[in-house]
Image 1 (cartoon, helix red, strand yellow):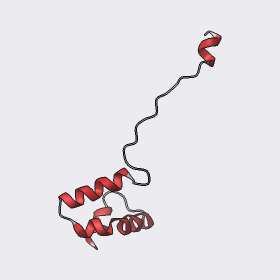
Image 2 (cartoon, rainbow, N blue to C red; image 1 turned 90 degrees about the vertical axis):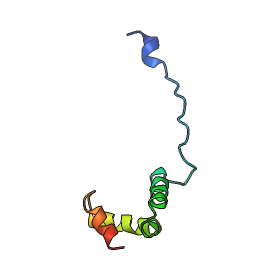
Image 3 (cartoon, rainbow, N blue to C red; image 1 turned 90 degrees about the horizontal axis):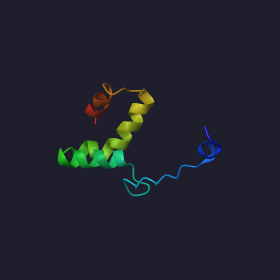
Length: 70
């Protein structure tokens, strides 16, 4: 390997932002899906439900059970 190849820096183009700063794209997608599916209770309480799921260490199968309690 040549000295030039090992010390050369690769310049990378920054990836374009997918969402506005401070807005989580997953939260935005959930909000949109809840609006389209007409699930206002879940949309309004999603943050609380997600926090409870973290506290309960719920997996993807257990999460709907928490939603059911809304």
